[in-house]
Amino acid sequence: MKRAHCLNAEPLRGYAFVAFLAALWTAVCASGVVPEGQLPSPYEVLQALFAEGPRLPAQVFATLSRTLLAFLLGGLCGLGLGLGHGVFPLLRKTTNLAIEGLRPLPSVALIPLGILLYGMGSPLNIAVAAFACAWPCFISARDGVRGVNPLLLDTARTIGLGRAQTIRYVILPAAFPAMVTGLRIALGVAFAVEVSVELVIPKQGLGALASTAALAGESGLLYAAILATGLVGLLLNHLLRWATQRLLRRYGPQWSGGA
Amino acid sequence: MISIQSLSMTYPKNGALAPVFQDLCFDVPDGQFLAIVGPSGCGKTTLLRCLAGLTKAASGRVLYNGVPVSRPSPGLSMVFQDSANSLFPWKTALENVVFAMAKGTASTREKRETALGYMEVVGLARQDSCYPWELSGGMQQRVALARALAGGAGTLLLDEPFASLDAQARAELEDLLLAMWGAGQRTFVIVTHDVDEALYLSDRVLILGGEATNIQGDMLVDLPHPRHQLTTRGDPRFSELRVAVHQLLAHGAGREAE
Image (cartoon, one colour):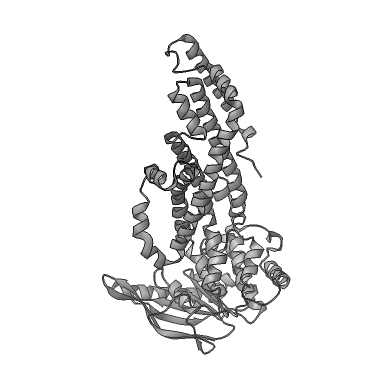
């Protein structure tokens, strides 16, 4: 099977272009066009990154662990609620208005409420990010159930399956690819919201590192923090692509092959 | 035996109920190969769904061996036109066939053996571990046929099963159907808009048509068995029957134009 998303499979010219950008960056810094302190050279950024080195893993761990916890919590709630909505029309009719009212609320708007409820610790970050990433899961699970091909349901009836068996053996597996897609989006959302909360309340994590560096005027460190955040995001994305491909292999290229 | 007793179906149109088909009465004796032909939109598929117990008719009833059909029963199995979407994409071909026996009491191993047997019947013994999306349209329809057989149904209801296949695959599957029918005491009811296919396969053709669909004709197909794609279709009797069916279809359409 083709490993389309393996890093080494990326064409060489992609890396060459990144190297070109780095060279351009260095050249711009050396030319003195940009005022001192606004754009550190790549060398300074790397220097800052290494100087921060020993403390960096702790920051990455803080961001990652809270992202993943929020993803688990929000993902499970979202999927559960979405499946419930898809399968039980009564639940949908009862709770739909409340949910549709709550859903458009920007998650960061919940930060003040979170501070009131949880104080400024990890539970706040986790709660806000979980809230944000529950929605893509909710939508994809709900629509995944609704979108199950009616012929499959007819087939289940022809075979003689009851309601519970149809849900267990037909509806859940049929909605599975949509649910995985929702989870994929949700992890990205959880990461983004987690970093935003860290920026607002800079106590711990990569967002906090960037925020404090900016306030202290340490431009090298700021760029290093942004770079590290980007790399962690890239890593998460690749991990997810790999997991999605494995999970959805049996559903065919339509689900497992795409980018 | 399937017995259709004054079966009618309606659908909502402009706030009122318009008839799809009206007062259909006919019997399908055990072991018969019945073809139902009619123009598209005449309610052929709906009729077949009523026989399968998947759709409830507006009035009238369907009896299967004397028992009213109100829900899908294990005796009647439906093969859908769109086999690509009626197979479970996350199951291999063999698993799809095994799944038809989900309600059976046999052991997993026995079910597997049975399923493999039916895969062989439909000529897919070597494709058992393929996923449906790895198979051609014709092969997918073969899996659907194997699944219907595995369900243990005495009656197969086929809804335009070969409509989306190319001519070659279609001819092969027609012959497979005839072989399946010849091999056992199964009853086949096929719905199609293709008159030639209906005549080639069946020993009785029911022609539907008219504004509110009813039976335009009920003809016995007295072509000899075994049938052969070239000789049967070249038989002068085949042409005669063909003309007769087309005349009845035109008659049904003509009344609609009045």
